[in-house]
Image (cartoon, rainbow, N blue to C red; front, side, top):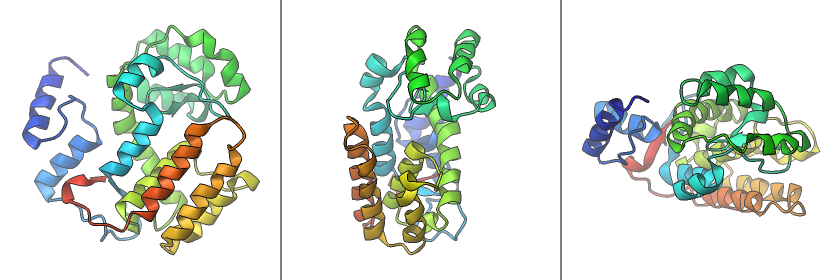
Length: 261
């Protein structure tokens, strides 16, 4: 983003009463939409429309990806390998193992240098032990948080909201916290439904359609069987947090805490 544009965006954000970070992300676009068209209700959407998630749920997703901006700058500005079947990951949970070369170029071109982009192409598609073996070769790369946020809010998040809606018909009729939990789950695990490791992902299709929040939460927690002995406590906590969001989703929502994706 050009330097002269950022102060103008910050001025608009201050006028709207939101975080003045200079990034035209989901929060900013939602605030502008609310000013022009009024806030979305989120609970009256017709089937097939876009997701409406809570800021609380979206914050949980980001926290599980980067913890905090300070933590990001200390530990995540260079590519990392999170473990398991992940690929080399940059920015806010952007897994290079599960994005195509064309998608990576489209999302990151102009936000990082051409030489850095070419280095990312080398590890595109690598997962698990293959990704782990090359991570040490990327230590000199630095992905600024501003660039990471721009890709996350403008490219990745809307794409995964669409994937969530396609994988789980009826998800847009759930309460916003539950929509956010399902978005977090798909962002972390993708949308594949076949195989023993995916049985809970498949079962969730019926629970979402039936708006059975208790069964949804139980299915999400049951996924912890996959990582309980793998030394990945972050994934166990993520599933617990998603289940809590689902179980507490039937609550009052203020208009300004809803974000349409």
